[in-house]
Image (cartoon, rainbow, N blue to C red; front, side):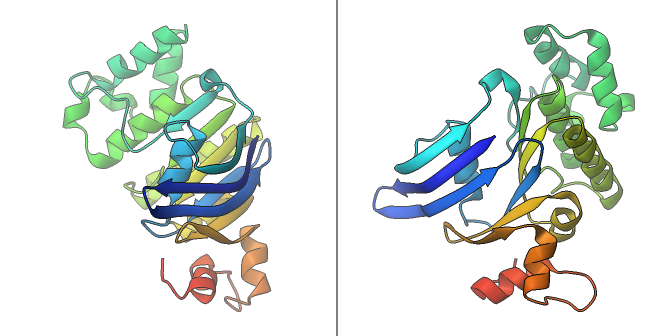
Length: 231
């Protein structure tokens, strides 16, 4: 679904991505892990064509109408309520109003449908942004920190939702700081440090290869071993 080869991105004289290569297979959940400033958002902006690569090749086998995006909290209108926000996008994609109600229930905002976005908490706004991304059952989901502002229970529910979407055929590319989430949810991960991928593979295999823990694998320990940096 996504192929990135020898990707480089420079801003003036500063190189922020160097020789980044990875692939995301159709129907898998792939996570990009790394600290703030590692280059995760820059990669997303290149995948979504908001930025142009300085060098390398990027292929995304999905049209803009087949991609669901959750990039920070953009695309929401603060003066409109949750229902009105999603109805705007439902009209664009000619979806029935029942789909809007269904998706609001899925992300736990059914009882807040008439509440203005400006009145929502950070976590609720994040759930609405996710609802907008999944509204039309996209072929590819690109999500930037989809559970970062959510309480543990809601985050688990969102992870279950993403797993169900993957089981139904969607491909999911996400960034996260949540190591436990990446371990339980993702088929494969790539560890990004200072604009370079230092390791990639299945999260369990990465952990077991370095004996990060005797019982449960720990991606945070693996990242520390590879880079000397704590996530």
